[in-house]
Amino acid sequence: MRVCVIGTGYVGLVTGACLAYVGHHVICVDNNEEKVKIMKSGQSPIYEPGLPEIMQESTKAGRLEFTSDIAAGIAHGDILFIAVGTPALPNGESDTRYVEAVARGIGAHLDGNYKVIVNKSTVPIGSGDWVRMIVLDGIAERQKTKSGNASSTAGEETAEKIKADFDVVSNPEFLREGSAVYDTFNPDRIVLGSNSEKAIQIMKELYAPIVERKFAEDPSLPPVPVVVTDLSSAEMIKYAANAFLATKISFINEIANICDRVGADVTQVALGMGLDSRIGTKFLNAGIGWGGSCFPKDVSALIHTAKDYGYESQLLKAVVEVNKKQRSIAIEKLQHELKILKGKTIGLLGLTFKPDTDDLRDAPSLDIIEELNRLGAKVKAYDPIVSQTGLRHGLSGVLVETDAERLADGCDALLLVTEWQQFRNLDYSKMAKLMNHPVIIDGRNFLDRDALRKAGFRYVGIGRA
Ligand code: UDX
Ligand code: UDX
Image 1: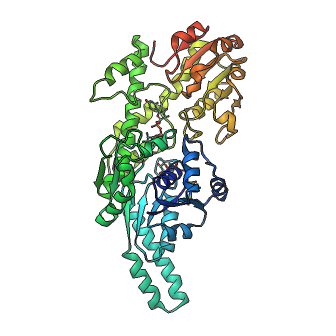
Image 2: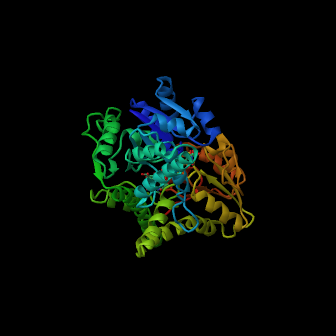
Image 3: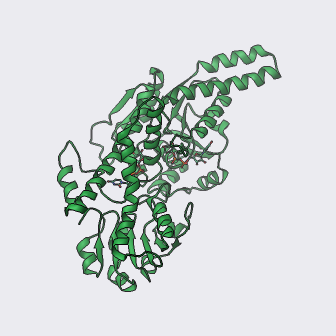
């Protein structure tokens, strides 16, 4: 099938590349020329395991192309994905201006052939109809220009034809950064929201190779469940899923804070709780809390939408508050160990919001650096990706070291912020000797406590009193 994906960020690029890999012909459009140049050269502008290989193979097979020309992308695609970012505004509301620009652009370039317009971006509930309206506005603007330029009848006929010839589908993504390629080929479910039977059929055909598990790790599993519903319910499913996962993490963090006070170990508690199949063991890792490009903005946007409709979401507000507090708990633990932080040097192990990504959006490290600086501490950091790529977007007040031993040198304490796999195997005995005080706060309960103690560290976890 012929697909156009507009917006090649963490979601759009993975979606486009994977759909090409399973056999569709995909054109990815981005208005950032620099990015397009990088992708055309076979490189991925983001760090995502497995993505460059998928991109290169699909490009070689002639099924994946990149352009900044939105008109060419729209002319090519029978299915047009909108996958531009929807960041949070300062008041928590979702910033939909990029979605609007793309929808208007689609309206301006529709050619009369039937198109399915797919909202992949996480958009506020009700946006499906709104996108439809903006596309129609785009068509009307074009028609106005046309009828101003030539005889109006021809323009009106075109507008009539185009108006009837597209449907909007909400198809939320559930990709985790760092395993987005795996998640695309092995989804738990696919959600399709639309009031058009025709559009739903086309989307089912598009996803058939994935639903039938032709590219799955275990092809013998039953087909992927496809949830077909209305537009608003599909949009709500995305918010509800992310809000629930964020709630699960804030819940276990609250339990961790109580564990710290009563002398229980939250890792044991999470295991004992999670083995109840009604609860499940996933997303029960206590630590310095959730960040990233999705949970913070999606939970805020849901609170904001609820408020717009006259409902105060007390539970979700508490989920956000617990998460905010969790970032300062690491600092309280540093104060407890070192007393005065002014003039001390703190080394952060990891900077990104989670491992296997280069993404720093709403990373707990950013707040921790700011607060440590405010308290007069010097902050250094080592992150396997940020240190290597030199990406520093949003980072200030921190000296980025090139390896873990340089990081440890002269530090008064280490704080593990991101659970990169390689942090399990560092030479901690050597690092302890390079430090002023061999103290480590394990902000993700990730390291081997006994091994660290043997290496000479004082080990402090979260909720592991
Ligand atoms: C996506 C979104 O779809 C968001 O709603 C969802 O919640 C998370 O995933 P993400 O992939 O993280 O966002 O976005 P980002 O990495 O910011 O990429 C957006 C891309 O769109 C960028 O490459 C940007 O250059 C491009 N863009 C933006 C356009 O091509 N046109 C525009 O008008 C605006
Ligand atoms: C999330 C959702 O999982 C995905 O379905 C959605 O579409 C996009 O947002 P992502 O933000 O990439 O994915 O990562 P995720 O693995 O969900 O982690 C989010 C944050 O929660 C990270 O900061 C992570 O460190 C934190 N987390 C996760 C915990 O603190 N504890 C856990 O048990 C799990």
